[in-house]
Image 1 (cartoon, helix red, strand yellow):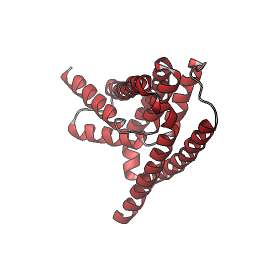
Image 2 (tube, helix red, strand yellow):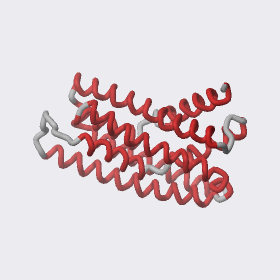
Image 3 (spheres, one colour):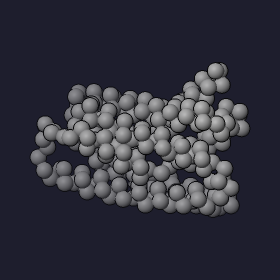
Image 4 (cartoon, one colour):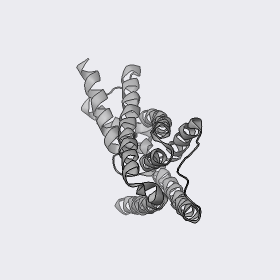
Length: 214
């Protein structure tokens, strides 16, 4: 019992911290909440967190293989660069178009659309896979996880719940911020575009640094 509790809270905390810094998914959750309401932000976060559960499961299954084949991680990082670069351009263009149009104060948005948007953006964000792969390897060394069904279920559910907890914080905070100032919606696309550019640079550094070390 103690083993399961440690595994859950260790994974929950690591997953929550993994999305604490501004990134594609959490900032889009904040943007969705600010523009379309807290409910849509929550549904976006739920869709994103469900995908994280699948990514955590892939990380568990692939942990040994990935670390025996570093070129796979290098490939994932290259895909991440392309994804981040695409969204940097996308959010910048969206911000320019939004500036040219008159902002609407009322949004009629399908809640289902917000949920599936969370699913989509979380699916193209591949970085959690090597992250959970590394966590699984670390927990395995510590003796907190074994390749048993119960441990795997605890690991992936804690990963999804930890992710959702942090996304909820983003949704709640930026929803309150928007209600007070109204500025986040106005500049959210530019913020996301700049953030994606930073992630492109960081990921490129990781790729070239990894090659230099190798």
